[in-house]
Length: 127
Image 1 (tube, rainbow, N blue to C red):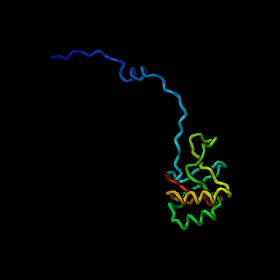
Image 2: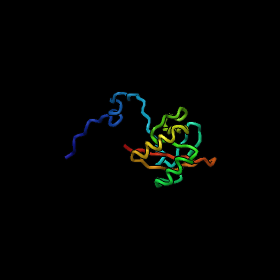
Image 3: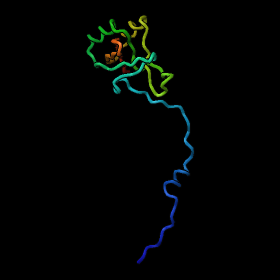
Image 4: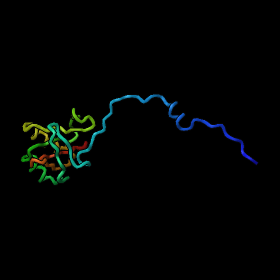
């Protein structure tokens, strides 16, 4: 017995056309410097992950001697790269207090290097 022919619909294209328009909202995904192996700072310098998490003794030595230091996710969005999260580099005056704050919390330390030989201590603090 032959089957009845089914009426054809527009299919998937018809369903897509019936959907409401996409809502526009500003959403930016943060790029994890640890997972991606590096990041671009606000000055345009690329920092490459060298090692980490490092032990407490090396982290303390880097806190005193690294050229730059950052508290990881405490950053801002880069104006030239709207999808890229840029960690804030701390001033020399802010570094001792930031190190003490990181020691009081649960943290991990990572060492980054720039092409020009500069060293950065990246402290990732978890609550």
